[in-house]
Image (cartoon, rainbow, N blue to C red; front, side, top):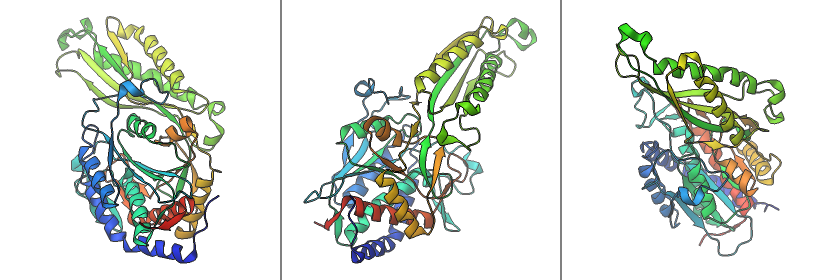
Amino acid sequence: MTETIDPGARRAILEAVDALRDDAVLTLAKLVRCPSTLGNEASALNEMARIYEGLGLAPRRVPTVPEQLASHPGFSPPLISYEGRDNVVAVHTPRERKGRSLVLQGHVDVVPEGAADMWETPPYEPSIRAGRMYGRGAGDMKAGIVSYVAAFKALRLAGLQPAAEVQMQSVIEEECSGNGALAAMLALPKTDAVIIPEPGPGLPAMYSAEVGVVWAWVTVSGRPAHVRDMQAGVNAIEAATAIAARFKDYEREMNRGERIHASFRGVNHPVNVNFGTIEGGEWNSSVATRCRIGMRVGVMMGYTAAQTKADIERLVAEAAQDERLKGAKVKLEFKGFMADPCVFDMNAPIALLAKRNYAEVAGAELRDYPATGLTDGRFFTLYQDTPVACFGPDAQEIHGIDESVGLDSMHDITRTIALTMAEWCGLETAS
């Protein structure tokens, strides 16, 4: 049962969120200035530790240790070392536990900015234009982190605090493995619910389902030659391209109507195969010796990451027999995502409560969003059976050029989390 908030307390909480609005925008700007791409998350993690200290909570570092996680079904093969990149968590403990416990979680890592010269303003110099903050990570998902922090701070400003344990988790690698979220989840006690303010499709929405993802890397070593005698060589770039072409038929097969889970009905092309990186060749007038391509393969509900891995192995092995690859060596590696798909319980009390509160403060509905990407929410649902409400502010051009977040939307998400936390956890006077 959730606790109904006293009308006076509700009003005080909303007024406190309003009073903290400018402070929240400044906090977001500080986080956006942290260029927290893979391996460079330390500045954002340190900022989160300072933020938690500012809430009167003791930050704790949680390392991501592959040897301890490798046997877990949610583990993904790491891309780089975890040295110096410990997740940061903090726990609020009430004087008297009366309500239900809650996790507030978000990832600090961001994807690379791409061609920085294509941005209207530099990607790590936050800029506010027409009510939106621009910058890499502003939407995905530093605004969401700021929303949950500001929501907790607003309760305190109103002279209140949650009457249940609230865990705050700032994690790494949501964008490539999820291992940071897995480490933080396992390091702390199971809670009654989770809120992850991850941005949706650029409109008010709550994640109802998400595909799984597998990352793979194919390296082709050919036989170099001078371009005047190119027929005597094996061009690794052409060979890698021939392998990639095989996955287009696979993509079509996986998007056939009978393979699409009910939660994704109506979603056009939910299973995507993306070739995101290519490195290869040495000289314009030489037949390329080596080429490495990185791919991201989606996984539909009803299928698993392990089955998808086997499919990739089969397709690459078949491609290696192609006449165009005669004399080439092909190496296949799996690093990064090995993530299963997930369906969220949209009738879970935490989801219904968040939807109701959002409708009241924003005057709009959070629609169900079956996502063709993925979030850290899968860990709590698949491996803990903990209900997750995953919804966030209006973010646009995430992973693209001129990423931005709507500041009015961030404010609505903050108000929603504050009221939902108050009702879910119950309230007591601040200590």
